[in-house]
Length: 92
Image (cartoon, rainbow, N blue to C red; front, side, top):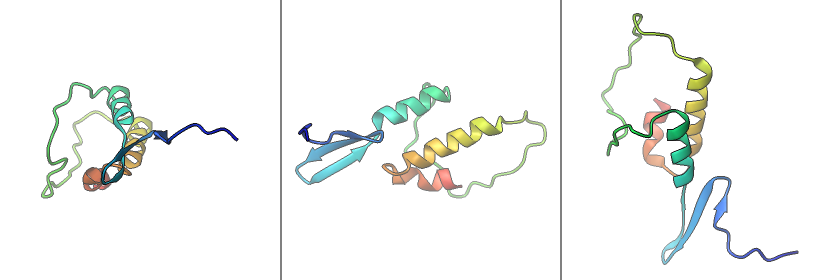
């Protein structure tokens, strides 16, 4: 058995030890998601979704790649483990 020291990175989650305990976050994973889906230059938002939003089908728009959409939603759902504030927007 080998002592590798304190755990700092596990399954894409970075662990930081603070005076209040451990903190999980995923800065590298968030950057990878933004890069993969070409959203590095997007605008940030304090509130990730408008709660009064009504989604509608736009027949005139181009079709969306269903595989890419599923990958995006899956990535965001995994990201929700450390960012519960985006759970509503991802689920909607």
